[in-house]
Length: 67
Image (cartoon, rainbow, N blue to C red; front, side, top):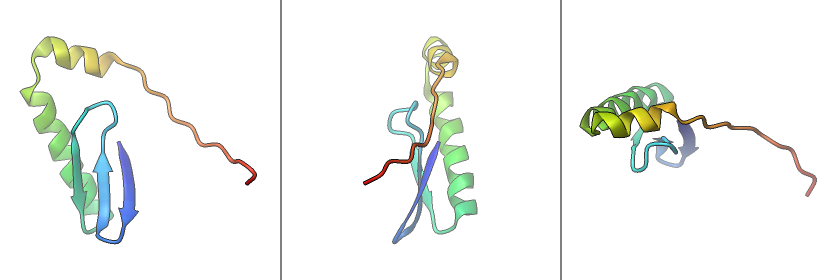
């Protein structure tokens, strides 16, 4: 998941689960909300679709550039 802080609090979303997102006024609230959103999202998927999504490997990295 990705969590971003903005002027309204914290926004959380899952790149691998299209449309799975949530928010919270604190980081802890955003984490609890996105956990619930992920659980509900996965419960609604057919088993074969869920298995495909959960077997994908997604890598993240940070880079520093000179601008």
